[in-house]
Image 1 (cartoon, rainbow, N blue to C red):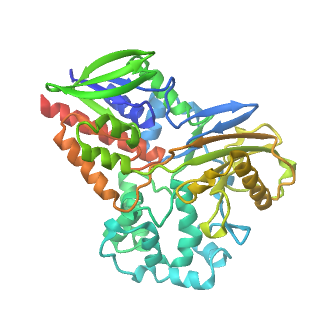
Image 2: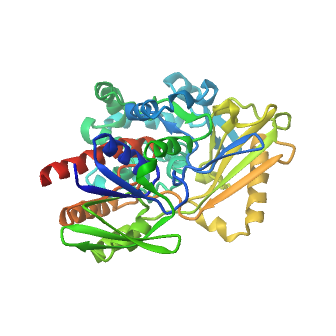
Image 3: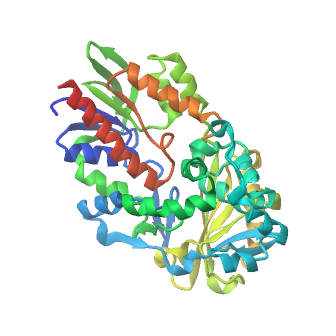
Length: 460
């Protein structure tokens, strides 16, 4: 454990991995180019409106989340979504329809036609695909559940999770648990029933059943608290310029307030986005550079809106709504932020978070920003029956938002593993490997820390 470990990036992946390694007695240094921790987890309280510009919540799919919160003294700040937020809406023909959550509701809903409901009942009798590795989620769902279910359930769901396009995303890489239901159990319905027993044994929860959580002061509280435990190990405003191999070690050259600094280490764990990692590790391997740069991060604008409650005609009784591509709207959906977590807006006000663009419609950003926001507001007001302008408006454009696990992503994954084997002591991590959600990042952080510790043990 006397070997030095340098972690690139103080986002939730880097911090949580550093936390496990620090607990194990490892010598860890974190280099973060920004002046604060958290990466995309940015929270601000402005005039009583609590804004999350990045992830607005997480799903407690792993006991590791609560474990870190408790051990760092953050558990009293952890909050769970109100039950009112359990209802999710889908827009169809300009109207909001509650997504059915049980068989009776499914048969009653007007979201799906009678033909689509009958088609769903055929799912247990559909066989496996021949080439799941190179199959899009759209192809997978169309084959197993039919076109209408793809259009009005999966298409908006994919937009809500990845801001992605189901025709491009790989079912194997982007939705591995869904793919596994077919591979292991032979179908989705059979797999959901039988797989529940497996999850119970592992103490993990499916994303459908996991509790949604945040923190009183927003999601940024999570990385801030972890970083407070590791504060002696973090160097902020440290922009890594190059990495070279020196004997059995690696030398990082990084800039801090115009001063170039050298740091030698035995292990480098990168948790920075792939397009940044490409420039740092490309000199080791040009093919790796190509794989890292090929990961697509679409642009997404987060539009945060506040209104007087009396101006809203739509009952605020759910999580929010998602918009299928067939509805031809200018945004992907809206989260009813102050319904999910009550203290996200001042009294008698309501707060909403809208998402614009993504892989489905990146061309929207060719419009002037003011024009685009005006267009989105017009559509949002129509859907929500709002008669007044917002009393509060904030926005942030993420030019490279969420990595897309597109068809053929398995080739990237295989090469990342090959590179690690050929360059002992370098580990590639972050949300372009193993899942994009907060829960995925926390779960993977423990797996990666165990890999590093195993590597250290093998060295000694």
